[in-house]
Image 1 (spheres, rainbow, N blue to C red):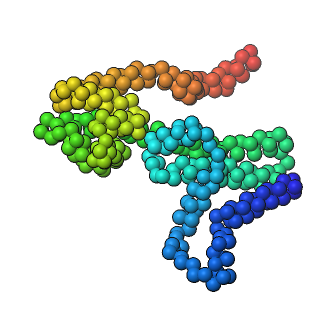
Image 2: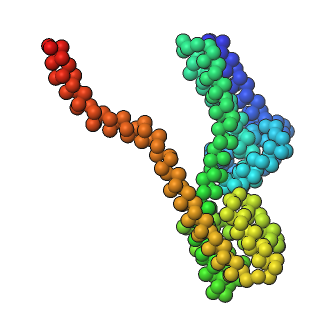
Length: 304
């Protein structure tokens, strides 16, 4: 497998050389230095982590992507909490780097192994798939976890909003107050309400800001709350009454979901009980009897 190691070395060196020529070598600066032209360096040398981030961003900008896939990934990154201007480039750059580094490490690991060649090829392909699709799975899990946290903090936010509205505050001021109160208890939901407040301050209509809130989070309960607020604002009904009714609906729904999970618990416990608890119980209860039978009864029957 010497040729495989040499091939990986040549590919790695070639890729690093191309990236160095593309990103760091500056022919214009060299020409200006030779011709005694003054070159102003306004940007000081930053931290190595910043240089690594710039490298990943520039590598991600070189990765081709379809507009439809980019839109889907942008929505997923937004729901996961990655909302920087270079989040998509960072994702694509991470996929490209991991898709090259992990197969190279796999080749170096199995170079001197005596395993079957088919298994070696499968291991390399699996490492490439893990490196290329791993960032997507991480973003998906991060978005799912963030949605769970938002869903968990929504009942408290709704109760606080009802109290604020019934005390005389408007809906906008109530949202701002709820965002401040939930800053430490539920920071994800507080961040979403803060972004919604900033959108309204920037000039967006309240209905549009609410729809953007539902789109950013992707949580079904938030979409229902947004629909209630938009309908109440459109038809002129009482915001406090609408929020209180929706709060009661969410309490009933949460209670029903808890009862549903409790009803499913008995069915889910069948397999652990059957495969884990019953064998040990069988050994504890029947084991001593079997030992006595083997030790006493069988020799007695043989002697007869």
